[in-house]
Length: 402
View 1 (cartoon, one colour):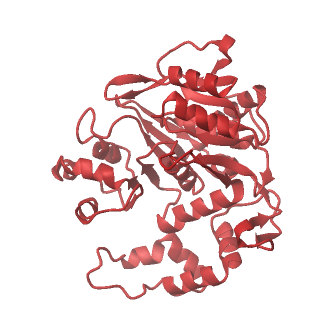
View 2: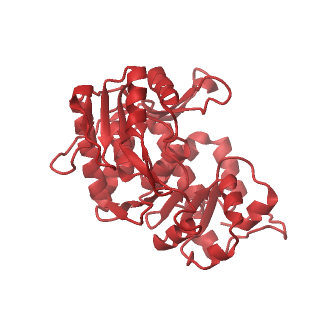
View 3: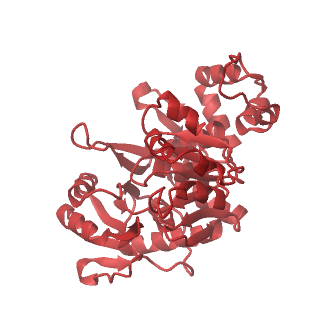
């Protein structure tokens, strides 16, 4: 691939090797497109070609092949993608890799106290299968909503995939919300089950999640809580509570669904009125996010992605899909970025050889106060792509991050 015109004062110009070896360059070359401008123009002029080619490029195999990439016969507002196709996000993000690369790392988690958990794709499949089977025993089925009120722990990933395996839809909720905010989203989505943890660590103290979850479930009329153990709090079966299921010994057949079948319901923050839920579907959401991961962030099977976020914000599910659909590892982080030491985030990135980092301008502005020396003393040579979300940048923090 050749670059379009690049101003001399550009902050970064990709090397010849990057232009030759990046995933978007490989895609362009495969389709005889010499420049980024040509690729962009054809993708706009021929969306059916482009998205069909993306599916093939990323190896996203449909259980039942689709009849047409894009059906906009009822108007562009009501476009339907991959019409007639059947798939499941859990197959693309987990099952396929558990079969193809079972020993590859899928999830890396580090607790605030320094403890580390790593799951392979094979183990992630076991965890997701156990979650799906347990939810099915609780009566969760096709189209039912399941709330996910969890810290950024490996079980949260398995919970989402387990919900997807059933053809149910997950409703991610910010881990810092109070009971009223959680209940509003659970009630609006008519959630049948809430998956939570009994707590998580923040600045050396355990934050009680279970009490908040119980209060929210009662307000919303949710009858079942599934509790991930972090603090050793006993669950109460009489209140419809059950512990996170043990993995292993259960193989759950993933349900194949229509490409337009709902995968998750993402709510707005509510700062501009009642929170509004956006429906994301198995076909469109996974293909689009996987493409963003592969083409915009160059994510591949050898990468480790960390986005400093929460599963309740859109970048939580985005991080999961962008990494796992591309065979990469998701790196999760518990606690504050500057505790127990002010350089904790940079030390974490170095320890786990994170290759792609996503962060918000607000957090960068906070970390800048500690000085660039805290970054420089850690080996961040594995880190090759930087991303951000949250709000617009101002210039000084952008350059500092760069």
